[in-house]
Image (cartoon, rainbow, N blue to C red; front, side, top):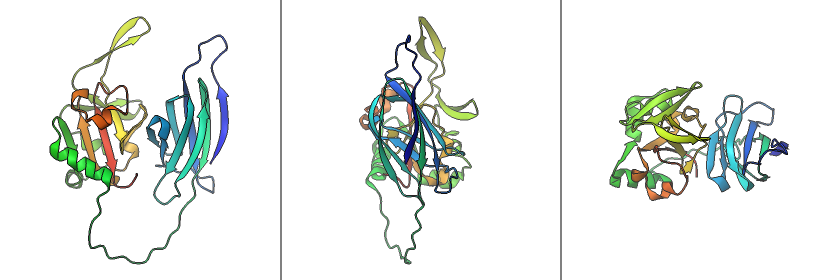
Length: 248
């Protein structure tokens, strides 16, 4: 992987943001865009998937040293360390290498449940206040997109934001301060993936519903398990945590 461009956008006369904007493009060895690559910023606990043109973006990453991981089935996972300065706009060009592995025929006589999916099942059995979409629910619904799995969940409605479906809590609008003014805005729920809180601009429909093991839905901070409450500062409107079959 290589870093293509790194430039500061903060003017001398303006205060410098304590965060950096990070975007990039993911390609294969031929230069063709690779869609559906999970990009994680480990130090910031952020995660997104690359889009149709291999593009991805983190609108706000805390300045400092971070480790970026890229992974997708059929490609070699890669890890690279970067350091972002306050106010920087960073453009990355990342290359994924395909893995071609021939495996002997294997007869499966038992099933394996990873620790992270075991945690999902334990919370499903003992949670108070959470709602869960299970593998059986996904199979029964045969969804076309991941957002289809949330259409029947009480307390959640889907809203279109620049052609991206976002989950909005029915608990009411959220009051935010813009400059000196207080404004009422829709209460957009945060989306998590495999234990990580994703970027606010993340589109859940970048994930194939057939790759999903289950989904946890929490409509407010009081019902969110402690292990998720520590991963993001703003979970007032609730959290939707998606668990895929593969992933660490």
